[in-house]
Image 1 (tube, rainbow, N blue to C red):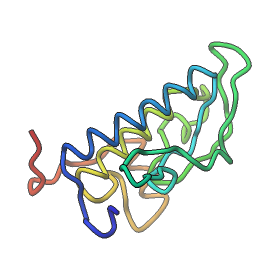
Image 2 (image 1 turned 90 degrees about the vertical axis):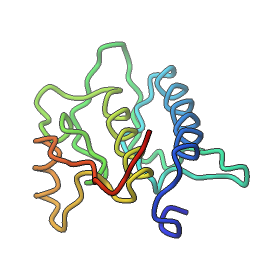
Image 3 (image 1 turned 30 degrees about the horizontal axis):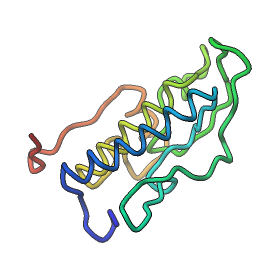
Image 4 (image 1 turned 45 degrees about the vertical axis):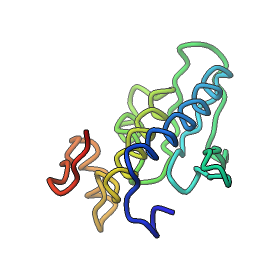
Length: 138
């Protein structure tokens, strides 16, 4: 849908985002980190309700406070703490990816995207992105 329309309206993004958040909340309440949230893993039904899919990189935490150290995810959506790898990561990586999804739905392109994966990773580590002047939201 995004490929066809380029960007979504704020109302559509709010509706879809709320559904994604409910899915994330469910996963996290069961100590599951998805670790590969991206537009390609969000599926819309005929009522535009999002469903999360592709749990191939998901992991279950054994206890509160546990940190995972596997470097995994999709370049445009990967959280900086995953790239750093030193302190490990937890639920926050899904929230980072959620933010990238919302930005992408509103703007039409991921915030850190470049033609080179290493450059994309550096932009993520530096949190180097800009909000396009052509995209106005309330």
